[in-house]
Image (cartoon, rainbow, N blue to C red):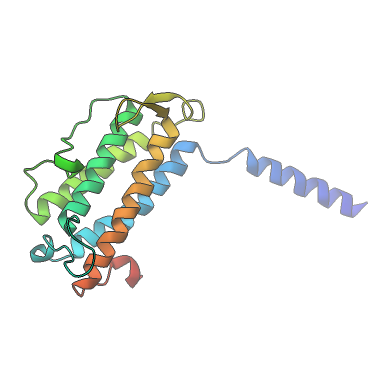
Length: 181
């Protein structure tokens, strides 16, 4: 009889645990926080004089500089977050979605990235189980997409550019802070 009681108790405990699943906004916000903990320290670690670095050897013609990688990730975070929130983008996407043309210095770019992430957190915190599949205007063109697909762009797209930034940093003797942990 005892094994049945333990099994029932375990089943009730698992059931209770399932009912306390985190809200979807917290799940997406944690993903953005994970990105933030990697990309911001990397942007801060790269020396200012290396912000205009882009590889030249191999097939690198026309690639973004380190600065443009960071500001592009930020510009897209602003764009998709505005779409998720149903707001006008509070930032200028700029040429090739590289952010405002006025971004010139490391400090300006790091601030822009941090501000974009703060706006991204606002968007992630607006997500609910009820609004995830609502169709919203895409940040890219005129198509309608699900809110959840637009929210996910902020993370996966930025991690793609973070990977490029890591390569650029290492090519300049900078070990990414995330690799030092």
